[in-house]
Length: 269
Image 1 (tube, one colour):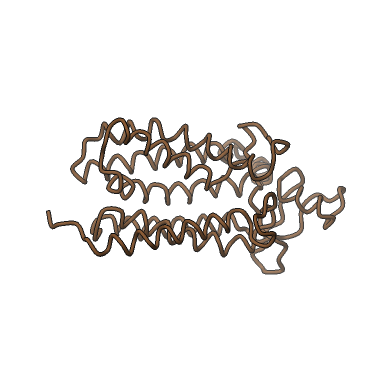
Image 2 (tube, helix red, strand yellow):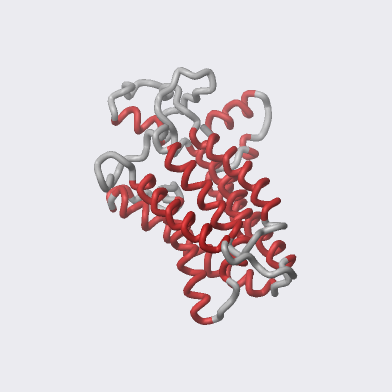
């Protein structure tokens, strides 16, 4: 899809390089999310150096976790290299949380308070990164006749999925119109950001913002998986996708913790 936008710009005498690629959007999301997290952490009365250290160790773990869980789901044969994508959002989340818990073992800090300050940045990162997915032509949906369906050019993951499924011949220049699930999730992330940013100013307890965000995202991801066409790979029970199973576990854990923490609100400051 990025190539289509670039060709349009060239045809109108504009520079094609103003269209970002996936990795640019990912890097932008990491930078913006990190800056927002540090700002909210400082506003909570905490030392910004702690947030910087957590992000320094957390971001590489996020990238490694995203790649490893993707390979575990789809197999080592689906290795695309770091430059061309192939990553799992849930894997990134696991890697991020693992790094922050390991850091806690050596240098204790208020974990749930930090997670609260990081959650709006994660939502904003979701908004930006899924735009990159759209431009990259990955994470697309099933074929649709809706007026906002998007046809992706040859060479994209959406096109390859339809070609492998026998839905289109190899001679086609573009795919059949599909649900732009990347944009659905991007808009969802933007909406979550605004709501969570308001919530982080008046949380009922430490962990309120993070657990609320996990409840929202796990619910959304479970539903949107029914629209996605590239969610093959391992299916634990043959019906639900791997991401849907993770979503169920995440929802249950977040709900239990949310109800438990709600019974002991934070003392007034």
